[in-house]
Image (cartoon, rainbow, N blue to C red; front, side, top):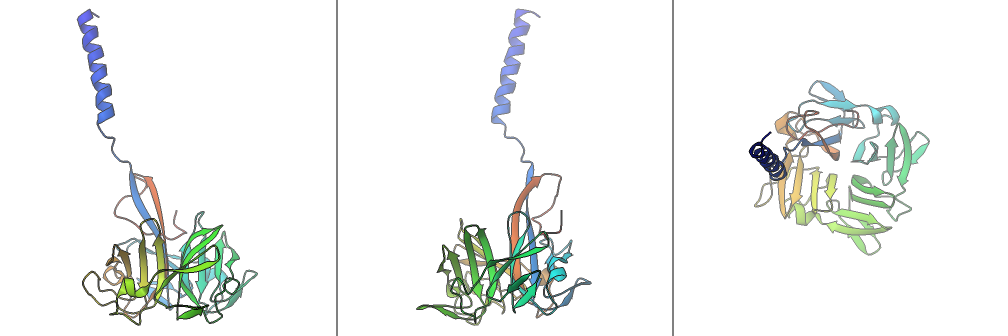
Length: 284
């Protein structure tokens, strides 16, 4: 190769290296959201039978419905799962509307139980942490099990010491202390005074909350209209629709989505495509 040819070759290599550094590589990931949920009564969802202790999962458009049987298999008939949170490693933490005994665990409605690999373990004894016997945890988000750090709501107002927590408030239990982190009035406004937050996912880093309430939410400036089967997102002072269950055909009129858990993950492009998706813990 001549000197001129060598100079051209090295110039080409140098330009190629520069282009490789400045041209952004295509993103090879898509964000997926896995969701498991439970409803407040036995029902048929898109021809599939589910119970009030069973788990339902679906894509955000309502397709690819999956009905999990983990809690059906371990909980007695008549026990309604009314609070649910996915945790790292594939397990899930839940609470129920009544006391139950199963899998060597005895739990009340103010307790939290972990289901992991088919085994049950009590992870929060509500009475030990000062919750009155009248309390029923009906919405929960677990930030950490060790150390224990959970966000929760109850189904009726409770008094702890000199503080009263309403059923639309979100409370944090961290370091053994119960602290109000978001009042129902600040999220739902005064137009829905009867609302009970009965499903909850929290993103503490952005101060955002995905939730469901047991009564319709009335439309107002900065607040969307929603039904009891929908999920709404509170962010930056506004209440937005997160998942319209009625529009997707997932929920029937009058049915209440009373427990929900989200799990965010990233997968290589081609593993899954399409819009943000919702999955049950049984889906690979």
